[in-house]
Every structure is written in C-alpha cells, then in structure tokens.
Amino acid sequence: MTDVPSRGNSRSIGPLRGLGALSVAAGAVLALNAAQPPAAGASAPAAPVGAAATGAGAGAVLVSVEACPATGRMCGAPRHNVVLDGRPFTLDARAAGPLDLTLRTGGRFADVTVTDRDGRRIAGAVSADGNHWTSTVPLRADGRYTARLTLEAPPEAAAARRRPSHRVARLELRTPPAAEGERLTAAFGPSAGTYGVGQPVTAELSHSVPADDPEARRAVEDALHVDSEPHVEGAWHWVGPSTLHYRPRAYWPAHATVRVRSALDRVHVTERLYGGPSEPLTFTTGDRIEAVTDVAAHTLTVLRDGEVLRTVPVTTGKAGYRTRSGVKVVLGKEPTVRMRGDSIGIARGSRDFYDLKVRWATRVTWSGEYLHAAPWSLDAQGTEDVSHGCTGMSTEDAAWLFRTVRVGDLVRVVNGYGEEMSPFDNGYGDWNLSWAAWRRGSAFGPAASGAAPGATALRPAL
Image (cartoon, rainbow, N blue to C red; front, side, top):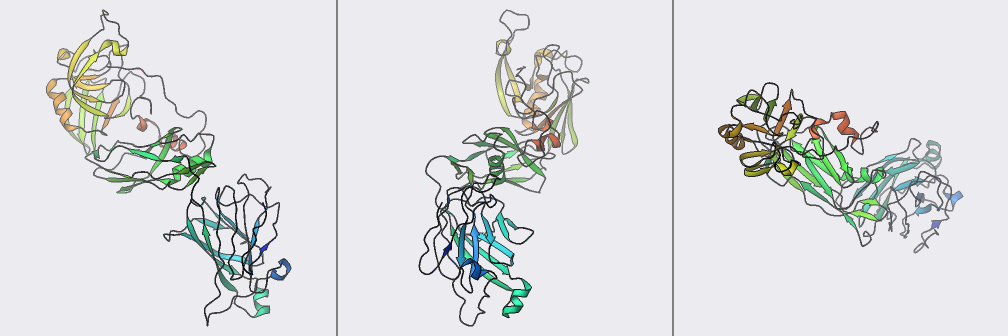
C-alpha cells in the first residue's frame, strides 16, 4: 500500500513498517480532515515534540493510522502517517479490524473520544503508555465519525516552549457503504404477545456463523440486545451456526416487558459479510404459572405465583414410553388433536397401537408429548402409569388446565423414570442447562470444557 498524495499543503509522511496488527474497519475508505485552525482569540496549539525530526512543521501533530490485517502478527502493510496541521487530506486504507491511532510526535494521548453521526460514543481504550488508542469494535460501514484527540506534551517540552501542556486535535472519519452482496440479519421470536415466564428469546440468523470463527460470533452476539423491565441477568447461547437462544439466569419475572433489538446493521461481521437491518421485538410475560407433574405420586399440581391452584390425579408414561423428566415449556394448545401409534413407530395391529381424537391437548414437545384429556384411563389416574408418554387426566381437569396455561408457561416433571428433556432438539428444554453450562454457549462466556451440550436422538412419545 502506498501513501495517498495530500491535498493542498498538507502532508502524508512515509509509511512505517513492522508495527502491531491493529487496523481500520474492513474495506474502509477513510476520509480524514484535520482540525481547522483555532478561532480568533483562541490559544494556538503547541508544536509537538519530535515534529521537526519527522518532517512535520511547527504546530503539527503526527498520528499514524493502522491499515494492516487484524491477525495478531507483525504488519506486512505500512501504517499511514497523518500530519494534523489544520489542512485537509484524504487517506485510503483497505484492511480488517478495529481503528487504531498512534501518536508519533512525543507526549501521550490524555483522552480520545470517537463518536458516530448520532453522537454515540465508540468504545475504545488508550494504551498504558498513552501512545495508542484502539476501538474495541470495528467501525460500521457507511458511517461518519468524529475523533477528538486530547494530547499531552512531555512536561519538559511544554515548559521549554511556554505553551499549554494539553492541546486538542480533531479527525473526521468516513467509512464507505458495505459492498453489495450478503447481509446478515436476525429474525427474533416469539412473535409479539404475552407469554409465560419460561419463554426463551430466539434469534434465527440469515447466514451461518460457524463456531470456528469466535470473533464473528462475538460481533453478532454483541449486536443483539435484550432488555427487560424489571431487569434480570441473562445471556445468549449458540444453539447452532444460525440459531441463538436467550434466557435469564432464572425465569423471567411475572408481568415483565422484554424488548429485543439488533444493532447489526452495517456491522462488519466477516471479511465479506456485513450486518443488515432486523425487525425489533417486544413481548410481555403474564403470571408465573407452573404445572408440576409428580410421576411417583401420580399427581399434577398447578401453581400461580407460588400458590397452589389445583392438584389433580394423572397417569404418565408406562415402561418403554416413560415421560421425559425435567423442565419443559408450553409450545401450543390444540382443542382437538388426532394421535396415532404409527407416528411414533408402533405398528398397526400391535397391542400398543392407538388412533384417537384427543381433547384439550397442551403441547410440550415437537415430537408429540402433551398434557391432555384421557377419559379412557380414569381408573388408572392417580394410581399407575399407562400412557405412551403423555400426561393424561380427566376431561374436566384437562379443559381447566387448557384455559389456565399459556404458551411459555413452565411444565416440570419430577420423581420420574424417563430420560431428561434435551435442551434444544425437541422443544424448549433450555432450562435444563445449569447457568454455568448456558454461559459456556455464549461467545463471551468461559471456554467450554469438553463437548458442548448437544441434541439427543428424538424419541417421540404420546
């Protein structure tokens, strides 16, 4: 990369090679304008130490802008050195990574503030020696930024020149539009409405972001925001390359408002992929409803905000068709559903085959586990397990439960004999992961130890 000729009397000092790999945003064409001369009556800035040695004139500040690949290795491309002496110039740079500014004329950065066109501050940090400022995230495409540099000269230099020890310089930066082509967007779920306190937030990405690109995953996750009133601690978990779930550490509070939005638009995700606009989502939660099936006691107890509403006798899955244990979330409700044995591999003509129209069915797995009316098993309800995996009860109790629960409410199965509900492959089993395990699925969480929690083979049960 060569230096771009300066405009007017401004200068671009020759490149310095072999420097650290901090860089400007991918594909960026930066238009930088030095600060205009101070207004009449304002204090003139002091000449920086070392300006003469570098070719910068009196009163100039020399700052280098990195344009190297963000690989963590030594640069193979030059830095571009910018003389901020009140005269504009243009610098072209095409690379990947965060914005890095390095002071070349002695002294140190006392402060660096970079804001976008809406006045929002871009996060960054000054190095311990005060010579570098680096943004913690890449700049967005098609953005306009203002950098305000507060410079502190060495005490001996300020005293020798009888000038103020601090001065301020400005840079105006512009990044080009993202290249035509792919845009990464997120579709959030559930849809707007009121849900139970167990409802996870889902984000379906328009493009895959593989696990072997943790930097891209962090860029995506950092741009997906979930806020609730009242506030609770929560985190995203990567279920797959294009799917994330978000849940609180515990359940959502009752009567909360949850707002989900994406700040991906124009974010540089990978070398060829930028974020695009996504529709925000707002939903609320209702009462905290929990339906607890005690398999050993053959009872179902429903609680609202911790108070028992009703306890009813039930039957659950018999040997070979045991009801899954653990925490499930209501997925939907169907007034009538047809259930057939061959949908779960039971052959027609077998003693276990069935073909029934079932009333008041509350679904908790995609493979067909429900809580529903089972008038044919009234004699067994409360005493033994005779179902093919569902939780059966009287028609009256099932209708009451159907009216009481909503999508997102919690269904817990305790003291049972079945396998644990899997986290992600058959409904919302998210709550069966400990908080530590959930955090390991975040791009910002602690490194996973061993294999990440994965999906188990589906075992449909009715």
